[in-house]
Length: 428
Image (cartoon, rainbow, N blue to C red; front, top):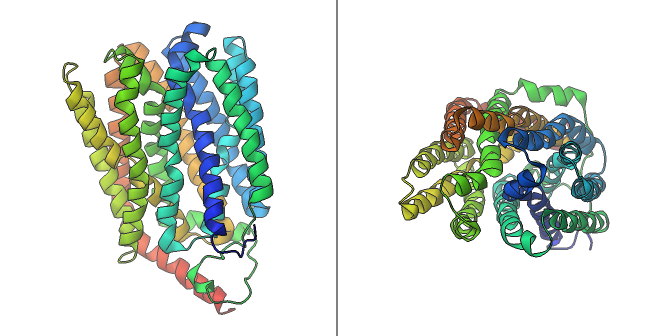
């Protein structure tokens, strides 16, 4: 299929949607398998947390490298390589027969978890600023949908087909299929192609990675607020991903059917929240450069409020718990597509993968400690509810404060980029 054919860019979105959906399923599946894997290897919550922290640590270390490679070389081919690595490392994880072997092979699955800056920067060259938030929101639907798929595979399918190892063999094989699809089906796009200043130019300039421009990332005040909120903001996602199933089982005494019945609607609402966040971010962006940050600020504030109300709901009021979790799911994802779009609103095209990779590196530098820290707090306090709540609420309050700071810097940084693009378009 030709890059110039109408609709090709939406074909690319579909390919990356399935890439991310299956990858997120593979990555998040482990949360629903906590009881099965912990029983087999006879491990406590702290050692379980170390398993998840290992993969996060590997991904964190490799983010800057992947970001640099995506800005220097063909992103589509690198993404095919990442998918190949995903498949192979998941197979290795399924083979492990000891806790140490499982810990090491699970850590190796973090190698390909650093691949997303390449996806978002390539999509950013297919879609302009007024559409990016919505498209990123569509792609980020894959996180909660992958969470839901992992829930179903772990709680329902795994016991029927021989356990958790069989599931890992399946998801690993799908990684190899996606690698072939990306390699042969997705074409690269010139960096900056979708910027409005270049819309009517007959020939697109070639922008190549520059260390000078890479250093400019750190001179934009908005990026520092983005970096710091990311450090705090990923804590709740990782805590909920890796411990919430266990919380429902041990604290609320839900069985597998109750977990699926409760969490499936919550996750679907969460998925819709990504698109809603991107939609309203794009909408407000047309009127003010602060638009995306405003939506993100509302999201973290109300997300913290409703998760507190949900988890402090008495055990004998499951309907109230369910409703409050649904409200949490409405607001929790609003910031995610707007953060990515904001990075692209203030950085030049040739270093956007690097900028996003640095953002993810800083995020994961905090998140890598989240599972182990939560596990340690649970072991020390013997209270999963308190451990999950204290990390989520404190993290989101910090994000709220940092977003308020970004409201004062975003106008200048976004306008500076538009002026720079105009100068390039004029040939100066």
